[in-house]
Length: 117
Ligand SMILES: *[C@@H]1O[C@H](CO)[C@@H](O)[C@H](O)[C@H]1NC(C)=O
Image 1: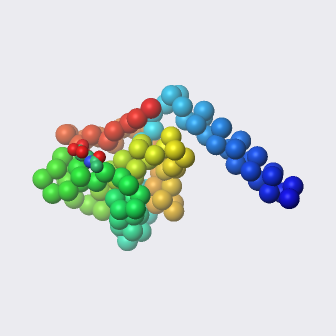
Image 2: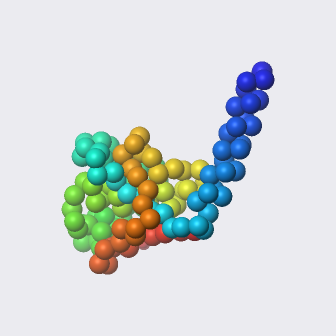
């Protein structure tokens, strides 16, 4: 009983602290961790673009983020799109350890990695 209450209080505290920490201080993007194997990135990419709800239209053929056509680059785009879209609703840049946060804008040429406050 008490431990359940404590857990709820801790969860609430957690939710209050995280947004403040990342709020407006510095911009962060979410990208694929270089050390994650391609098969794991592919699984996370498929999830992000599917049930995750990321908008992956820009990594389709003939779209600005199709090149470089690698699992790592496409996963980075999808992870970031998902993260920016849902971070204010509690989403994290994690993907079972396949993702990492960066303060360097990963945008290149006409492929823009959005950042939302
Ligand atoms: C996905 O992104 C594309 C390109 O920005 C946009 O045209 C499209 O409306 C978006 N789709 C959804 C479902 O938000």
